[in-house]
Amino acid sequence: MRKPIVAGNWKMNKTRAEAAALVAGIKAEVGSINAVETVVCVPFTDLDLVAQAVKGSILGLGAQNVHWAEKGAFTGEISAAMLKELGVTYVIIGHSERRQYFGETDATVNQRAKAALVAGLKPIVCVGETLMEREAGQTTQVVERQARVGLAGLQGADWDKLVIAYEPVWAIGTGKTATTAQAQEVHAFIRKLLGELAGTETAAKIRIQYGGSMKPENAKELMSQPDIDGGLIGGASLEAGSFAAIVRGAVR
Ligand code: PGA
Image 1 (spheres, rainbow, N blue to C red):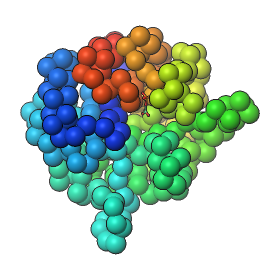
Image 2: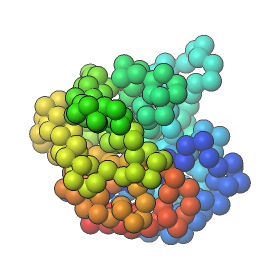
Image 3: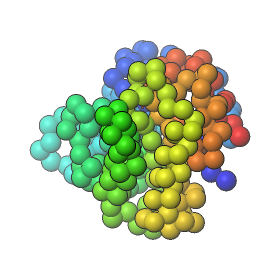
Image 4: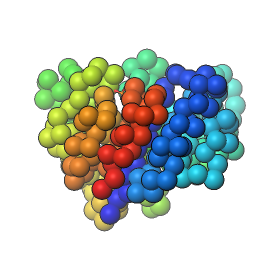
């Protein structure tokens, strides 16, 4: 059985003082829930502080982006080795905000995912269609392209480290959530595709998170679907109480 994974994506929120308070709150609320893997994906500037705070606990630490090169002239970027050194385990790759505002493409998602894996980080690779694409009936086509290109070249043990986040772009930060049926349908499609890419036995072990306006009120139902293995949470992860309620809702 797949262990659900609930990850908070803090995005560009929380100064160090705020981060310290939030992670302490999360630890107090869900630090003993072993049935769910709980991860916080924090801004680069909070990583060392949160790493210290989660040390020795069951909470995992994630970053929100990583560069594909080992080092060099890439002003403003951070390498996988730099993240690893700070105690980071997970890294979000190809979030729709990176694609929309920072020119991220399926090809760069692939480069970043491969670099993360080489350094021993676990990638959370995001896929998802825009409203226009959904209305044009292109959802599966878009998700398939993002996954095929984004995951090209992964092999063997790489697949065991991979997490996929299905985040319909029209549901992110908008308050609009995909219905459980809509979400499950795409998750099942992704798992079938992963079966083609990695083999069905391996695909059955890969966690696929849902993301997009997930909150305590809708999380449990979404995560009760057969192919929805947790969530990637933005807004509702910025407060310990609502994030913890979602983590509790993931217990199967
Ligand atoms: P949201 O963000 O929960 O605020 O919709 C999710 C995400 O972008 O990962």
